[in-house]
Length: 402
Image (cartoon, rainbow, N blue to C red; front, side, top):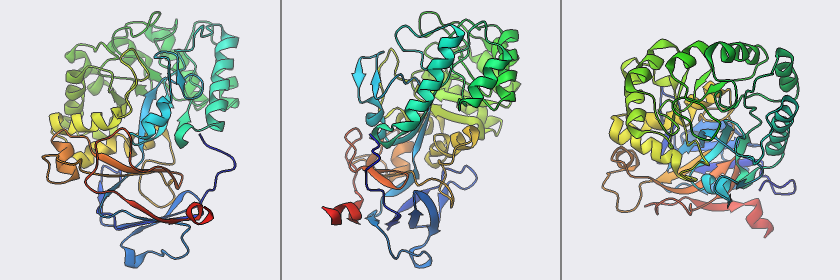
């Protein structure tokens, strides 16, 4: 958990990077082997001879490992702290960090036992979740929470109140009593007016009280994100998925806890349309199928190996695409972005010739280090396979202080 008293290094230098993944679809691989961050923000990227590496508080030798932006899980359902009542599990957020996730986005705090459905209660829960997760980071992960589920009785002034309180998201439309296109469309317009981003549930019901949401409701509601277009868990018919891809320009969210056939179909359809920039990834966890610490990595490997998508492109779905669509200051390796990184390599004994080839063959990579806001949060991951190469923390102010 993030502590106010922890030592936060001012300057971080990572050298000898063997492959730098940018998170940018237009240029997914950078010609660089060194990255510098100052006060948690990327300040320089390039060849070592062109970058100022002096005066570093923390030095990391990547030993030829790849570096990617920290992964973003676009669809989670947090409740309070690092606990999920859905699976009665503690530590799921920290566990996801060990799977390379550095940022999570709430699609609604729907698993809270006795979740309030009255207007006063749902607004209070949203503000509480937003405040609590902004103040406490479990495993250092940035959880953007406070996503109220739409219920009948909400009026425009409620959206203004939520926005003024710092709420920036709506929970999945369709998990509450608002389930028709016209009613949802009205509330989406109110949300958009006050800078609140909307996501809609897609497919069959996932929890008691949720609803079947088909293409007509989605297209009429016109949300910013088509949540789990591959179902959560039950997907729409293939022809409806194509209609959603072709019928709007909104985000296409593909999740781990959905239909894999539908996931591949949605990705291929977006590719045929030359609109891969619309694809973002989530886990839709915690859920009935559990918590998936490596869920985002698994989706990258699935889409690459079975969807014929280059691995470096698939990494963009979970980084730069999500960052741009969600308005985040991370997710891309470029000056001015937050210093959220994953250092990783081909898993030992993978049949792939290198990291990208191994992911393209469906193997998960091994994570050797996760860095959030310039702070090393874990070294060798406890949840991924052993990597062939591991980065080394050469020196740090914390080490010197010890």
